Image (cartoon, rainbow, N blue to C red):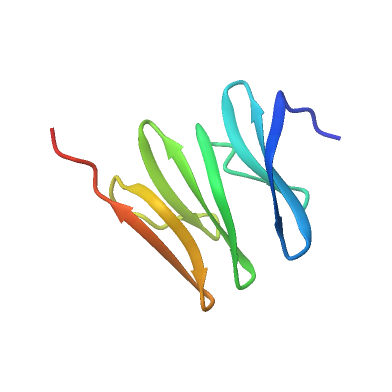
Length: 99
C-alpha cells in the first residue's frame, strides 16, 4: 500500500472508509483508493454529490471549493461549511476582510 507520514480523521461515505493523510506537511483526503487534494497544502470536507466529489483545498492562505476536479470558486473565500442538500452542493463562504 501507499506510505503516508500520518493518517487520521476517518469518515464513511456510502459504507466506504476514508481518512485524511499527511505527507511532508501536506494534508489530503484518501477515499476508495483515490487521493483528493494532494496539490493543496490542506484538503478536507470530502462530499459525494451524485456521482461526483467535492472538497475544500487550501493554498497560499486561500480556500477553494473543488467539485468534479474543477475549482468552482472564482475569488478568495473562507469556506465555513460544505454540504450535500437534496443532491446539490451547498457552501457557506465568506470573503476575507480587506486590509
